[in-house]
Length: 485
Image (tube, rainbow, N blue to C red; front, side, top):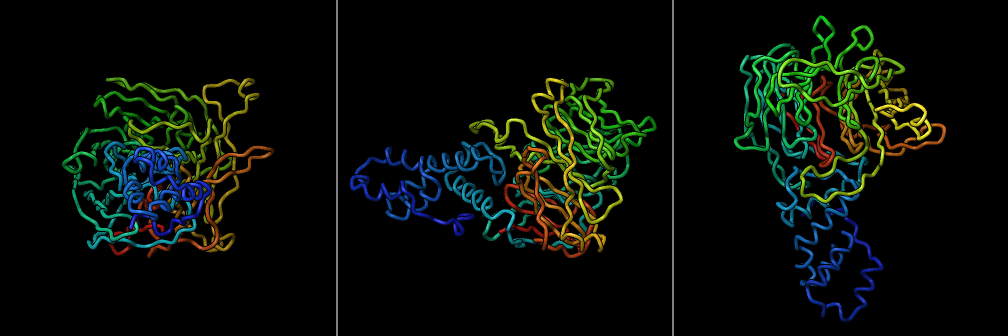
């Protein structure tokens, strides 16, 4: 059964009624009928295909589902499900599955029920788990070893888990893996706790599995992230305060650009994100905006802050970001559509330092035209504090549950883990006093949608917004793949 097909409600529509009342419709040639199919909604296509064998066969043609996928998923800015591939390479059945699944997930989000679809049988302690964008590739870290798994099978059907590759640290140190949320299967591996060690950039999209793209025998600091052509290194342990140091792994040069930290003012490094042609770095007390630098081939350059925003209260890990705008289809052969928001906002979700049982939310929103004209700047945003999220109202504060993980997609779909409880969030309109509305994430209160076996540290849960799928490391070893159905 196609994903979501069983839950798709077929309703009679005025257009279908007219078509059924037209006695000459069956006399039209296939080319004309195909043009009609391409302007129907998905519900109308599914209804019409049941009326005759000819319409059934026409409804299975690739051109019908290519148009449906583009208009119903990409044009509406829904998170596209499944691994990204060139659209021209997707067959008709795949386009149909992705379209129906995206619409079904949008309809039931976030009122979904969790279902464990497959589990790893190997009872080996998992130190870190990652679900690669696309929702079919899983990485698990076991000390100095990284294992690459592939989930196969259609959603809502039987799933299989296959081990396809393994990588071991050359130094024998415990590994930390970071993934590029915008790249197609690009990851970086470094040492978890020891600075000034090695770093390796690998591809999951090439063959053989875990193909090496770039290798650094010695890097400053520790690996903090990877985004586009840049490898981010946390050098805040250096005596001069350090900051976030950038390498151009694509060019494989040795030069770096430093996004500096002011130690007495900024506090520890917590996270970063690309936003509005800038790199935003979250520290304990503030968030600073830097222009995206050109990395020199040799030596080090220091990048000046464009703007610094101070929080109303210090924050701590974990931290996550979302614009509530879907990134869309990453391949170049996809049609382009106007953005859902001309000037999107950015929501920063984190834990308030020293406060259990809640999450702090802040939002960077565009300056109004009057403010921008009065105070022109290269980063025209202001920071607002939003109401904190308290799961289950006051009961969770009394129990002192700690938020151990926050996973956010660009669309605003995401999850957070409080103690053993997993809660979902989704995009919605947020009121900004006195008279403004912005899209931001809203977390579900009340009963959690999923409960893990035991309270675990961070990096043991991950999430894919397009598939509505999460992976959870288990306390006794191994992991579960959970679908929201």
